[in-house]
Image (tube, rainbow, N blue to C red; front, side, top):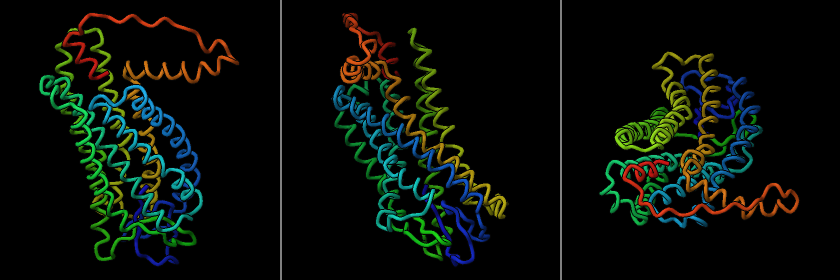
Length: 358
């Protein structure tokens, strides 16, 4: 979503909704602009609706039912808040893609800032959730002291400070300006350091959004799987399968966008600095970024709804607040079910390990 621009006179070039133009070869990206105006608004609308519902439900369950009793709960609610920040800006970017930026420079800076703060913090909290699971399973004894709510709040606060700090360049350089015949919210870096800033921003995005999460996930989940393989539990295969799903989904959603952004920023190095390649890369960035943004709709599913306890809370909420009311009109939607009797059996070590993943 964050855009970069060049200081080429407006009358010399028509820019796209997302101005990813090459500094040395300005091109008229009419096809990219048309693609963005047709594809992005409806797609962002869907992401906004489903992402808002899913993450708001996570926050509601954690606050109302689970009461934030563990480090995992702290990270889950912060991840949901990160996604909600990310989602909040989508209607504005959808309008920007469909027409032009009509919200002024102040809103341009503010929305760019919270968009990136949500993006960066989301990556950080996925990393923290991975480390949390790693400690719970691989270093269970140490985890008893380390995985506490106060430590969760402290590390979360540090991550928010880092995420907000990483968003500062956009708060400074993003402005509302005329591009061709339209107003756009775009980055305008100092002319003498323009290329350096663009390369720095791209490398920062790749590092925080892809490289660090993949490295942490690979290390931690490899150790977790090694521990799970040794334990005897019927849920072991389900836990290992969930781990693979988390890693594969994250890579599939974020890797294409980061690779496309890297190729465009360093297009000269890859001999892609011609108008045809530039246009194709701009469209690729628009498409892959939209797909990456939809990951915020998947987070509630793979990090919260996949857990048995969380599903239990969701079912309880549905029965008490939705099905009960709808049953007045559709009786079949609500039926009493006996509560499952509590077991006095103490879970084994293997079961504790499985429950930390599921």
